[in-house]
Image (cartoon, rainbow, N blue to C red; front, side):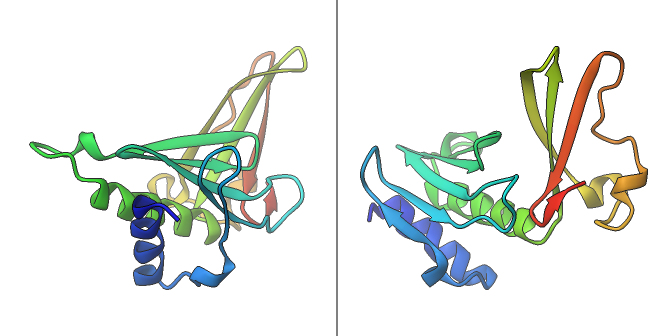
Length: 147
C-alpha cells in the first residue's frame, strides 16, 4: 500500500466508510477498489499519481483530486480528504454521473452533486438536470443504479 493510499483510507475511516471493504491491488499500478452496488455503474477505483488521486466511477467516468490545487501548498492530505468525501457522496446517492452519446458513441461524461441542484434520489428522475438534449443521448446514474 502506498503512503498516499493510506492517507485516503484514513480519510475514509474518518468519514465512517469501512476500510475493510476496499480491495487493494498493485498490478497495473497501486489502487483500491470498492465493488459495485449496481451492475451498470461498476466499482469505484481509487489510484494515485504523485500528489493526485484519480477516482474512477466504473468504466464510464473519472475525476481528479490534486494536492497542488490548494493555495500556497502541495497538500496530498487535503486531496485525500476531498477524494474520500467524493466517494462517500457517490455511495450515498448524492452524486449523479452522466454519460453523453452521439450516434451511439460516448462523447463525454460528467458528474454533479444532487444537493447543488436541489434534487434528491427520489426527484432526479423527473428533472432534466444533466441531460444535454438535441441529438445527444444522455444516461444518468446514481450509485444505486440508473436514473
